[in-house]
Length: 292
Image (cartoon, rainbow, N blue to C red; front, side):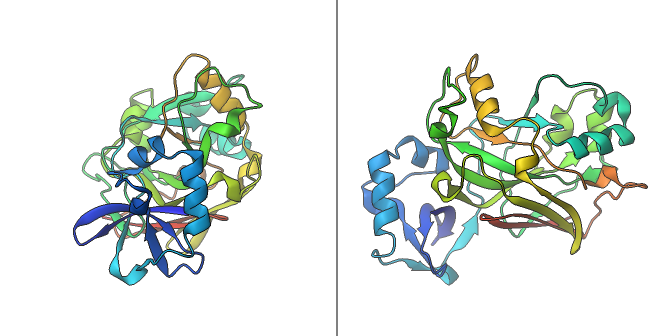
């Protein structure tokens, strides 16, 4: 099922999309009104999830024309966990752009965090911060959303902790990313995290999901790959991180981006004011933003 966050009559709600895509069913009938997505996940028992999935076609929904779809994550309760250089072809293009920052051997996964004060939704504007950024880039990524706290999880059991998947555009300021010798500042500018348009529950996909992933800039195809080509898979990442970190319910893991980002071209094709960026992942949908 597809889980959305939306605004109706000035109020933010969580809802499940009906199969016809024309109506949204609020989850309030379960006996609680979650304030945000993490609140929803923390109180979603397996029994409630089954009831939602079973009843969504029978419950009267709200016409989509009456709601404003928002990012499923308007606020981050904690920083997003990201994987760097998690596709071989992206590793090659990154090293060509700036070998000191992106080159070298990587015998273990690269993890870094990304602050997001606001999750930018589908159809929204993104501030390029061009007063301090001269190399704004895009990165289409599969986002993994955890359903419950994960601690000391085995790879075999890892997918039992996955609630679902979403699309993330991990916007990046390459000049800040390389100048500061680490990636936090260049990844964490306001508006530089787009998430959406929804979360699709894990039971809609195989484990691990092998999904076409693409990005377009002004309708020009830039990235075209498949999530099956990740260097470090989802189960490995969840298991490894959970050995020393309690991954709380609602944790977002951005699994890295394939080749085709702006810095990978010669000369680079960085974003500029007025550009339209669209990320697509098979089975989830598309996430479009306008650069201002």
